[in-house]
Amino acid sequence: MRGHSPEDDVERLDLHCHTTWSSGFCSPQELVRWASMGDIRTLAITDHHHAEAYLEAADLARTLGVTLIPAIELDCLSNDRRVDLLGYWITPTAPALRAFLARWPSAATQLLGDDATLAWFAAGFGVTIDAAQLRTVAAPRDPSLYDLFVLLVGLGWAPTLGAAFQRWETMRAAGQIPRLHRRYAPVEEGAAAVRAAGGVVSLAHPALVRDDPTVEHLLAERVVDAIEAPYASYWTGGDERNTHYRRLAEQYGVPTSAGSDYHAYPFSPVHLGVEVSAGTLERLRQAGRR
Ligand SMILES: [Zn+2]
Image 1 (spheres, rainbow, N blue to C red):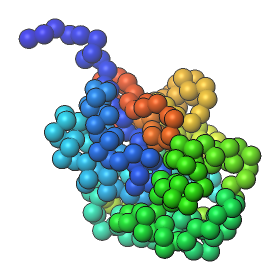
Image 2 (cartoon, helix red, strand yellow; image 1 turned 120 degrees about the vertical axis):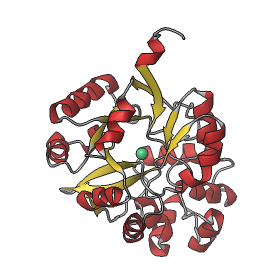
Image 3 (spheres, rainbow, N blue to C red; image 1 turned 60 degrees about the horizontal axis):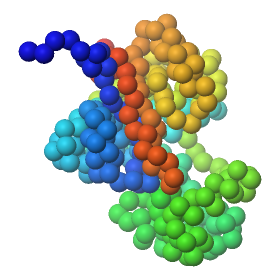
Image 4 (cartoon, rainbow, N blue to C red; image 1 turned 90 degrees about the vertical axis):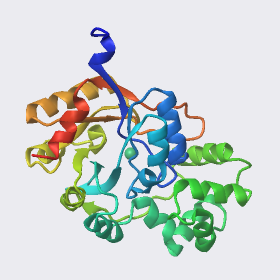
């Protein structure tokens, strides 16, 4: 038997990433393959309001030695603030979760599925986008950001996905992409849907709530079972903020989840996977059994 090695003290995992089922640019199978190549032992694909990636990639994950956790991310609101919930070890087909998702489509699905909204949105790009055409590109999925880019390339708006993405980012930075109204579920309803599907609820990227009293309220009232720290994307001062939220988790006696929020955006290097102390995953799992 081999002795104790530093490897025993850490777990390499990723409990937050996206595919073309929501806001990502890669398939569930690609994510699983990259996870295995990066020696990431445990992966949870957390598409917004979709759990299908798990069903698509579970067989490949088994083949490649990756433990795939059925998971989801829900776009919610708490006191008029955007709050995203991560749900782990859910039953993707649970009727209560299905009912929630039918009542509350993701923000992207609302935008890309509505003809009038889509027309207004497309006018900002200077192209005509036909909602039915977008649905055809996306089928059998709901139209996602990736499908919109595929259609924009097809319409000659940009020569490639990469060029389209750069053009989009330039417009976004200049405030030229219209911000449209979307409906979000109350956070309590999102948490209840995850629990009804047998899942554990973690608060995604708490710094992006931009209001610690709201974060503390969600912890104190046990609306969430856990909080995401470390989180490895889309905020600056990462180490400092991750330490802050890890302390908050300790203070409220809740476990942590950990993830990259990797989207495989064009030109983004693969940054799947984070290292956490051994036992983190098991503590998160136990949180759902209290
Ligand atoms: Zn996310």
